[in-house]
Each structure stands twice: as C-alpha cells, then as structure tokens.
Image 1 (cartoon, helix red, strand yellow):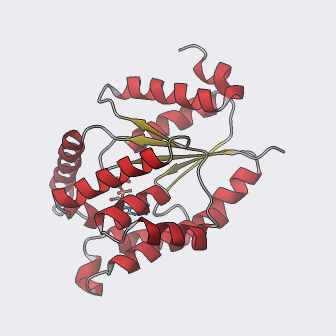
Image 2 (cartoon, protein in one colour):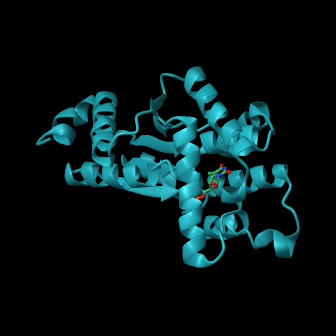
Length: 230
Ligand code: TYD
C-alpha cells in the first residue's frame, strides 16, 4: 500500500482555516478518498485534556501563570501523541490526513508570539515528532489588518455567547498577533515547496476552489476526480 498524504492548515485565529479544512475533507471524501481529520491541540483523549489546560483562560486562575516553555512543551506532548495514535497509522494505511494546525503554529505562536525563537521549536519538533513534516501546508494569511479584525470579531462573538472569552490566546495583544503573522511569513519564505499561502480575502467558495486546485496540482492522481464537475 502506498503511503498517504499529509496536509496541514495554518493561519491566525479567525482565518477561516477550519471551514476550509471541512470543505476540503468533504470534496476529497466525495471523490472517493479516505480522509482523516484532526485538530491541534486535541484529537486524542490525552490531547483533549492538554487542550483544556492550554486554551481555557480559567487555567491560569487555578494553576498560576503558564510559562512559555511549558506551553511549548505541552503543545508538543499533544502533537507527539497525535502522531503516534492517529497521524502515522493513517498515513501508513494510505489515507489523506488533514490537520488543523501543526508545528508551524508552535513556531508562529510560541516561537514568534511568545518570542521563544524558531530554533527551540524546530529542535523540539525533531525530538518529539521525529521531524515529521506535512507534504503540503495551506497557510491562510490575508493582510495583517484583516487578520486582526477577524480575530477580534471572533473573540467578541465568543464573549457575547459565553460571558467570557475562554481562549487564553484570544486575549493577547495586537503585537502578539503581529509577531505571529511575521513568523508565518518567514516560514512561507523559508519553505516555499511545502507552504502555500492563500492571501486573498475573497469568498469562502472562491478560496475553497483555489485550495482544490492547489491540492490537485500536488496530487496529480487526484486532479481529475477532485476538480471534476466544478
Ligand atoms: P482554537 O480554538 O483551536 O483556535 P483556531 O480555530 O484559531 O485554531 O485554539 C487553538 C489555539 O492554540 C490558537 O490560538 C493557536 C494556539 N496554538 C499554539 O499557540 N501553538 C500550537 O502549537 C498550536 C497547535 C496552537
């Protein structure tokens, strides 16, 4: 059996990547492919517990401030488990794996946002993930201004719904998001063969079509079934 294909989605909070991942999963599935989707942090039973600690803004009220290096290590503990439990077995079985965030998020958020630097993240990636790289990364990166607007809007919606914003990350400052944005730009420049940035701010459907074209171009065997009828 030939090895599967590993695709990750990246971008700032509110970039629309989760919606695009679902649309791509549906298109690939209806074209007859076996698709395994997951998100990080989370996806495994252990990972869901780590996610609760990392994302809940109440964590720091009960646990005290979470150090940046702890945050990094927990992200990688989650990732190592997801690789062992879900990603590697699915790739070995020939599936297409779609992952909502992966190591680029750690490099952008912990390396850039929390200013730990890329080197520590990449060393951690080698140690915890055996350097497993996605075959293709779809980086949803509209302009910084649009990204900040969307992140704030989403945060506000969440606060209206739940009374508080529960995501620790969404309470961060514009400077934090600016550093993340710049780190994503740096990653895209460093690794143009793997990372495909989608910078436009067109409709969900137009971006989906663009993503299908990119995936079809990377997977020539899929070109006919994935883009057929469109
Ligand atoms: P989530 O609610 O899943 O947000 P999104 O839909 O934007 O992905 O929260 C994930 C948060 O965790 C997000 O703010 C980014 C952050 N994160 C890191 O800081 N480092 C990481 O390695 C990962 C995977 C996520």
